[in-house]
Amino acid sequence: MSHNKSWKKFLVMSASRSYLKSQHASSSFFGEFVIACAFQVGGSGYMTLGSCVILARERTLPSTRQKIGETVFSLPERFNLKTFIQHTAIFTILIEIIGFICLYIAFSMEDVPNALWAAAFHSVSAFCTAGFSVFPNSLVDFI
Image 1 (cartoon, rainbow, N blue to C red):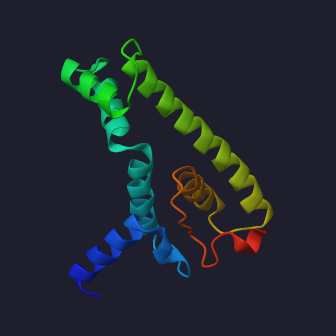
Image 2: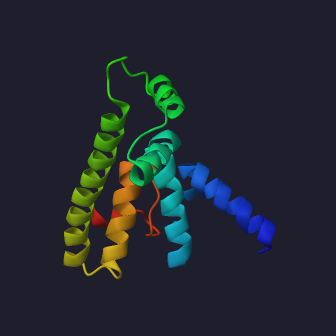
Image 3: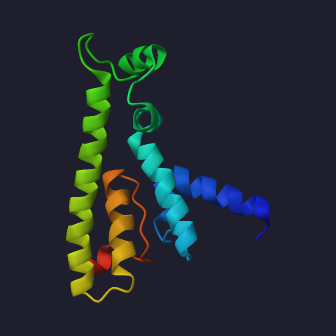
């Protein structure tokens, strides 16, 4: 496959879950990792993710970013954007960890190869409602 076609395929895969109705996400760990990162960013939202990075580095949001965030998130005037973003990040991480633990236990009981990675991938995919799977039949075989 040419380099140009592989990028087109990646863009289609990261933008559309319908592409994967009969195909799984990738045949390599790197490909699956890149796709998982793409839908994690999309699922979290660029504003939330960008604000988390700024908060992690600077501990405060610049006033311009604060006003943009309040507008984008449609927050009331007295609502603290920093607290909202921190709570959003914590909630996302906690739910994905809970999903990961449940999936890891289920995959381990079924002797799924690479159960650790499969659980991590599916937890992020499910939380972000991406609909991607590392298995050819998605999760149908586990029903």
